[in-house]
Length: 151
Figure 1 (cartoon, one colour):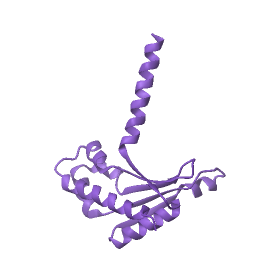
Figure 2 (cartoon, rainbow, N blue to C red; figure 1 turned 90 degrees about the vertical axis):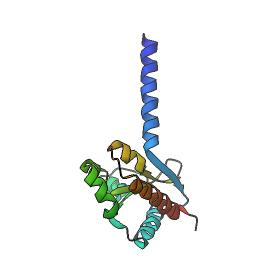
Figure 3 (cartoon, rainbow, N blue to C red; figure 1 turned 135 degrees about the vertical axis):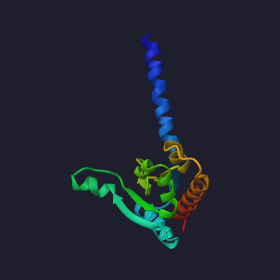
Figure 4 (tube, helix red, strand yellow; figure 1 turned 135 degrees about the horizontal axis):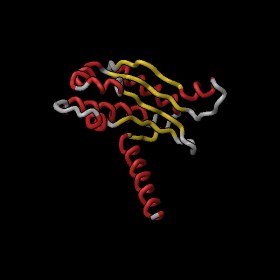
């Protein structure tokens, strides 16, 4: 009985870890966290994408005397894409505007990640907006690739 319980818990935990990994698209950056988001911001601004905020998690931790490796979040969006999705299901507004996270891991590698648009489509049960989700997927891929491109 105990053995079956341990197996069941292990399966649930591994499924949860797999699900967490499946909803994010992660890319390694050859640049620092700050430079990665600087580059992403510049590319987005060149495309007319609105930048709403940049959150420095490391600075927040430092403000309360805690340690955190570099970690920054960029919040951005395009109302032409987001509004039709919110018209289809206002609950997606909790995930919009979009966010990209850059962080340094324990090995000193820098990563850039965002929620896959198909995950948002599924999570909020939005149908009939496939073209927007395809555009969003392509834009996020192109923008983040430009940000992590070697100099």
